Length: 252
Image 1 (cartoon, rainbow, N blue to C red):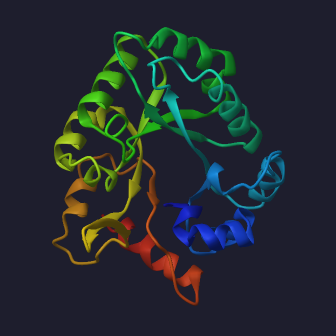
Image 2: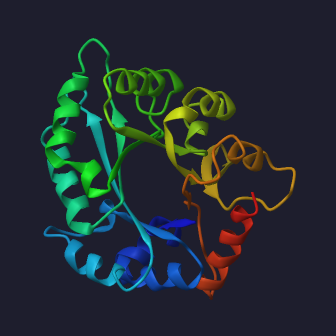
């Protein structure tokens, strides 16, 4: 089970630093940690320092960057992507994750993406590049993502999907339909529960009730696919709380 640093709260992570949570995740029985680019202050980011610390623990490393793969005009984000890929390599990540952005089959050059990924030789470096369904109407709808991953397969572009089981609420998409249509591309799953509170959607911990549908959703994916906790981990003993959630999800 991978734990995202965002699960510990943005303010706490920015105050303590992401390095603080590496031993917390390891001692809780986690198999990996997701480092979030948005929690770094100003460049240069402490990627090499984090890499050195991660070597002390047997943790899978995911590098998450909230940047779009495709710009608003449908063109490849050639300004940010090379930077993100280089940062992921420096960190020693096994997964690099971005958002889809404004993919348009008529304007977006999938072969340009293929060539960029080949330049960084991610496969030989043992790095899986992934695109996550986000909370936007362009990067979080089933149709857009299905078109993109279908094109990737057709052109042998090595991009996998990070399937966030909660983000579909923001785009009013059917999570089970999404899982059925996209599961062949999924290489990583983000676990969260979403509830509407006073008219607004909020991410909350997964409920432990045996009948909750998040369990049925996870059953749709191969159990060997890495899963991540991306919901609030709170309390006086973060290690103990995280360990409890890790055990809960591992039962499925």
